[in-house]
Amino acid sequence: MTAVRCIDLCKTYRQGDQDIKALDHVDIEITQGGFVCLSAPSGGGKTTLLNAIGGLDIPDSGEVWVAGQRIDNLSKGDLAALRLKEIGFVFQAYNLIPVLTARENVEFVMQVQGVAPADRLQKSKAILEEVGLQGLEDRRPAEMSGGQQQRVAVARAIVSRPALVLADEPTANLDSKTSDGLMELFVELNENHNTTFIIATHDQRVMAYAKRLIKMLDGRIVDDIAQRAA
Image 1 (cartoon, rainbow, N blue to C red):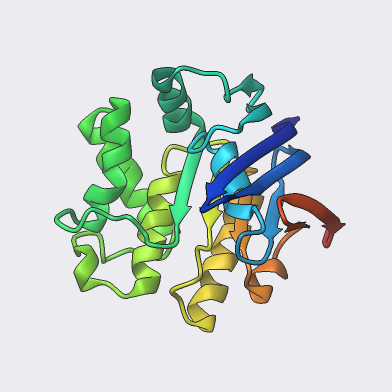
Image 2 (tube, rainbow, N blue to C red):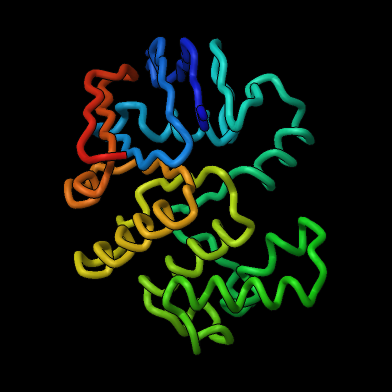
């Protein structure tokens, strides 16, 4: 089953008096349960591609399909509904709500989805335990380490069991040991729940975990490597 398909994606940004091709006729297909890393130097297009797949950025031309639905031509409301149901996001900056506890941060997505309070509580406790944060449910972000905050962000992204998780430089603010722990968690979630992961990174250690490594340069895919069994 295809989780993500991009067809002839183009995206150009204006920078000063120059046009920068962030996506230059990109074609990609990722099966459900894939574990893919996008690698590129700064400005190479990996974040733009990730944002296009997540519906955070609309390409100038081409098509983006997620979970069997074309998303690049959806209305803002329909796109927001699809993201809420099908896609989990993990950002470099965590994006946690400072005044909420770890559990409340995780429950926030489910609250928006209309999940009943008792179910939210049960699911948030279970997912925080799964990501190794049992006993820290009532701590606020400022009371947690960077690695712990990132695990809260991961728990929030996956608590509703989205088909797809998009992560943009998720280890950039973490030391090597914490980065390895986070990537091992991603692999475990991928294998246990068949969740598709697409991770934009320039970190060689992160790339080593990928089943598939896609290298980009100047908005184009220049290499597509199968690294380990899917």
